[in-house]
Image (cartoon, rainbow, N blue to C red; front, side):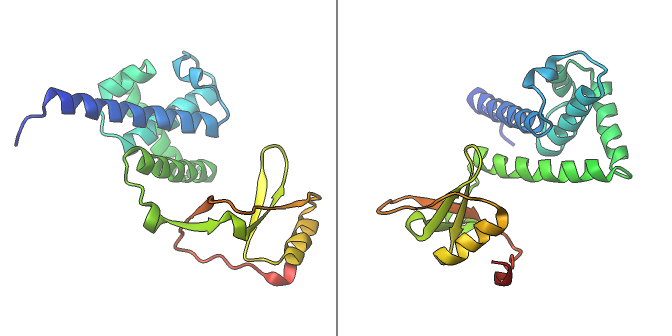
Amino acid sequence: MTDMTEESRIIDLSLRNRKIDFIKEIVSAYYKQQITDYDRKSRNREVIKLKYTTIWLVLKNVKIPLTELGKLFNYDHATIIHANKQINNYLFFDTDLKKELSELTALIEHRLTVVEGKLNLNEDYHYFNLNDCLVAKHGLGKAIVFTGYTEEEVYRALNILGVREKLIQFNNTNMYLIKRNENKQTNINNDNL
């Protein structure tokens, strides 16, 4: 086995730190807490949950010594072990936490595929030409995109949803909407449209 060169070790550490930063960002955004809460010394339940959940997710997704992980959270390695055990114990009976961790894990796995360069746009995604889509603005900075429906069907759907916006149709764009491939087929009941 060959020793790592100093350059490859620095690259590995940089990638590891980026992964940890991504996990921190995702978890803090998910729980609607400030990223600076990781630096707070507090016994506040929300701050502890934020830190312990993040520690559990980092240990699941990143290979890092416990002492180094502890430094990132101002904890010793024993507290890191305790945090991991606490989350594992809660998973036996706390269905809300189990759901939250499942959602967070899915977000993190997708984000890490991008960071690690493992994203395969040809196999992992469908592309829809925006010229084939109808778009209705909905709320601040949000829109509903329809593809494969007639304008009449879309207006009926928007009426059911209570959206009273004008439809936008793109023309002569070279832009595409990307949708992640899923193993499950989703069925749309056209009777409700």
